Image (tube, rainbow, N blue to C red; front, side, top):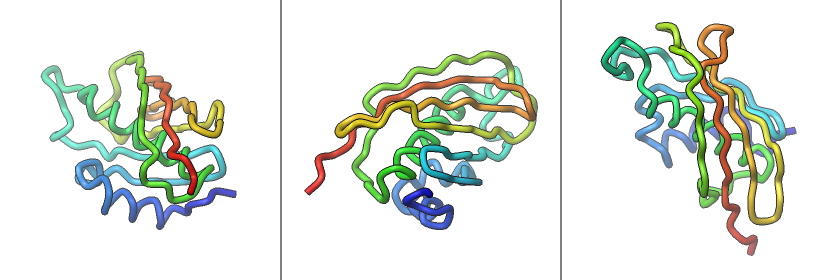
Length: 137
């Protein structure tokens, strides 16, 4: 069972990550060690050539990683990205993007997460990242 629910995370997103929230990103589902987020399609996220710009997919993946980490640890706002890698695999369709993230390894100080981004049912990007977990009080 996740240590944060959809309403809690979407509230954190609006308050703590307003630039991401402004894109319309929202948490669709969450369970312990797993999360699914959606980036609604928008003309504002396009790059020349009519495809969704890489930075928007990177933001979607990173926010998904954050949700996965919070699903395991609860509301720890100071968990931060320490490394991030993304592979863009194909051009997304002009539709909402869905990011599916899962924990790979959770240690005392680091969490390793992977995220696959889908356009319709086709994977368009794959990301991995490491989050630093602040020491507990």
